[in-house]
Length: 460
Image (cartoon, rainbow, N blue to C red; front, side):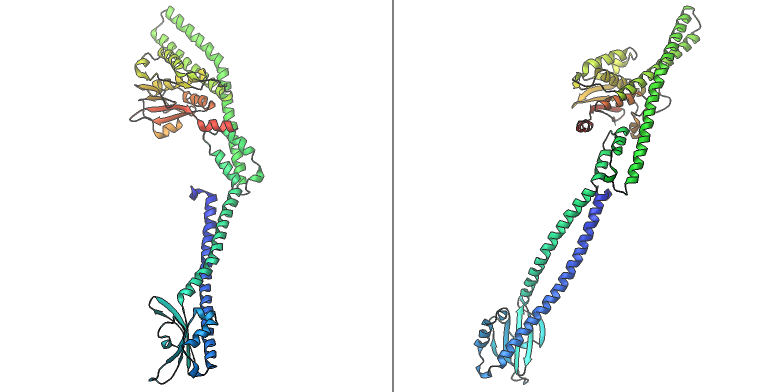
């Protein structure tokens, strides 16, 4: 999700830049601070050796002893951290260095260190020493390196804690600011991403958006989308109006034609006209019946989209289903052998005429179009399920189910309005019509309450 989100990509990019930049700054600070600390402590080590050398030169050589340097160290807090050794230096190899004074805890062989600064290891302790030679006197000052490392860690800790704390504050501020600036786009995305959102609701929502709340870069897209959705919504409304008008205007002519055909059938039977004429009249009557059913479905579809009956109570499924089966049995005599019903049916919150229309269309679709040999009706966890073993539909076919005037093939009977009518009726009462492939063949149709849409209506 984050990889496709502009908001989170922006947050991650800024965080990556901050982390890389501050890591580079901290590395630079660490290297520079370590070098400066090394130079400062080396200067302190050199100053300590020079101070001891000056004091030693002011004393007679015969008065020097082991306690001399200890007395000097007690008067100097700096020297308490530094090991020091004073010796007489002679160029005579046979004489060598004669140690005349040194501090307690000083490492061995300090007098053997080379002149100047050097770092060396004795046992588990690493030392840093400075050797100063003045005349016949050699002063060696040394300190443990772990003291320097401890001091460096304390300084870095004092610097790093505020640095990390400020980084966390910056991260929080970045996320807060970006979320605040993207709030209008998030609301727009969440609303338009809702399921079963029709074009009318989307157009009304986009029209009510304030231009000041939309970023300037996105404003043209929102404006064009609003116009496009408005045009599509207007086109659908015109299509519905045309369907309703055409169905209403064609009802009377079809009724008159049906009356004349039935009268012609009666006359042909009385006069014993050839069977071919009677067969043609029967085919004409069947065509008129089909188109009458088409007009009724168009009118019912238009009425269901324009008006919703208030639901005050639930109804039992069994009486309505028994009525549907009784009405269909006159046209499909073999239906009773195909349909198997688990009569442990519960209640559903739908008007009776809506439930009747839904069940009649679904069962007739399975019998007539799917040509199912078996149909199962049951109630599963509050969901009404109708299964059949009819023609296998592909995943692409299932996506088109419920669209107006869609049929799997042109050779099939019907006009592609039955499932569209069912879907529209159920959608008006916050019910969801689901389709799923049945294994190995057939289709599973489920009817259950659409809780997401119901909650959305409640919030409004």
